[in-house]
Amino acid sequence: MEKIKMNTPLVEMDGDEMTRILWRMVKDELLLPYVDLKTEYYDLGLKSRNETGDQITVDAANATKKYGVAVKCATITPNVARMSEYDLKEMYKSPNGTIRAILDGTVFRAPIVVKGIEPCVKNWKKPITLARHAYGDVYRNTEFYVDKPGDAYLVFKADDGEERSSRIQRFEGCGVVQGMHNLSDSIFSFARSCFNYALDTKQDVWFGSKDTISKTYDGKFKEIFQQVYENEFKEKMDAAGLVYFYSLIDDIVARVMKSEGGFIWACKNYDGDVMSDMVSSAFGSLAMMTSVLVSPNGYYEYEAAHGTVQRHYYRHLEGKETSTNSIATIFAWTGALRKRGELDGNTELSAFADRLEKAVVDTVENGKMTKDLALITTLENVQVLNSRDFILAVKENL
Ligand code: NAP
Ligand code: MG
Image 1 (cartoon, rainbow, N blue to C red):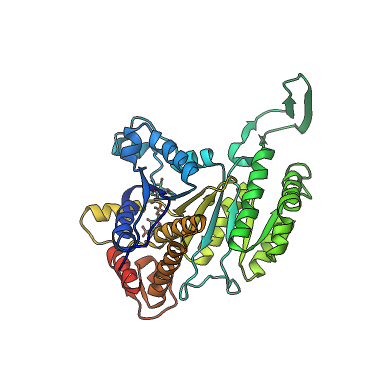
Image 2 (cartoon, rainbow, N blue to C red):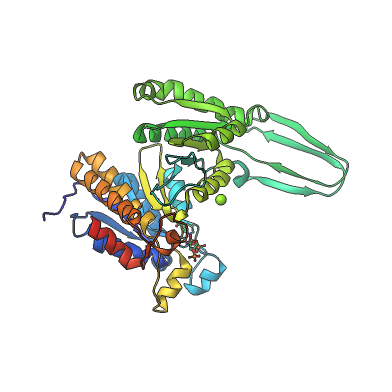
């Protein structure tokens, strides 16, 4: 069989531990035999990040700006334990954080829906894509403890000398106080990413905030979304038959639970943090979730939503069998290949991505799966496969 050609390279970011092992297997068994794979390879494994003083992560993000599409393996975010395990020169920042800071984007996460792995919310028939704004609010706050009577103020000192201040609270006793912020530019790019992704995936956009209570802060989010929608996207959304729906966050939550799914749920940072864990666990498992960072400039970075599965890796190192789910890793590759195909007008490549995804879904629906899914499936008489045999079963179907 002749291999499918690629015109432009993908940026390939390799990673750590068990996912690095899966990465190799997926490439060897499911990609290289069928696609004349062109990638610009960056090793973001912790050893290589340490050797380059983390320059490799910056280079990989910049390469993504050059080529437009990247696929990333899960990576270790160093903590104290990793300092000695990998003999690190410093406690490097999260690679995802570094990449997001360079590409400036929104993270979209959607469950991979398979028969036999049913959402616990019975009326959810289609996936819900969660779009989380990844800047500011409580994640960049300043807060402190008040331990005596006094007045807490919010103060803004402009560079031109103007000063504005407003009393938050008169404290008669102990308490807590917090200040936080967001940036209009960041909210604009969040809104644009959501509407672009909606057009891309042909889904409606739902957005909720608490603008009745937070008239200025949340009100700004509502206003910017409305402005971006009307000025830049309404015509295109209308033409595609798509809707933008805004409501209060509590109303949105209630409607999400009663919906059929099949839309993009744009969330402020904190809402997205909390609600993405709810949505993902309701749909089954983190290993059944796609994740893509979409930048407002049209760069795409695909990854798995889970980590490096450290516990399985240590078993693997001891020579024991593992049953690690490679589906999210495979879907990171298919997402990137399909996008590459779309951007290059390479329909063969996009069609290959579709076939590979179908092969994965068929494998699970035929009762062949890794242990994590076997524990939650409604299918009977399933066959539990090890990490490699699952990939080989997908290959058989492909
Ligand atoms: P994790 O890798 O997500 O794994 C946590 C647990 O979830 C696993 O022990 C396993 O449960 C289950 N699990 C996750 N993915 C699975 C898969 N594909 N197949 C089967 N089971 C799966 O989180 P972690 O072990 O807490 O973190 C390990 C490393 O990942 C950390 O160094 C962290 O910094 C990094 N991390 C990276 C990313 C990223 O690059 N995007 C994201 C999160 C974490 P059982 O052990 O019960 O089987
Ligand atoms: Mg969370």
